[in-house]
Image (tube, rainbow, N blue to C red; front, side, top):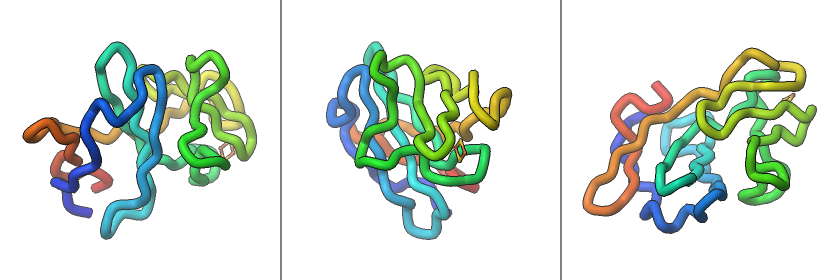
Length: 115
Ligand code: FES
């Protein structure tokens, strides 16, 4: 997959929330993008357990407290700040981080995102 694809403006990701994006052209996986304290992070939307998407409803990635991303398939929980799995069948593994950059006020996939 090529980098450079525009996603959205940072303010279109809800603060303390998450938003899903479909697989970019040539990509196998969608993305989950989170914003916290004005900082934006992105991960591949692929659980390290079986490679399934995390959410079962659009943009519903987080637990009630907003502390963890939750995989609805088997309940794995991941820290928002680094994608580390703290419980569930893939405890100790991590979501794959995807680098974004800001171009003209728009979040853009960095080159080589998703390899
Ligand atoms: S696929 Fe995510 S916990 Fe099993």
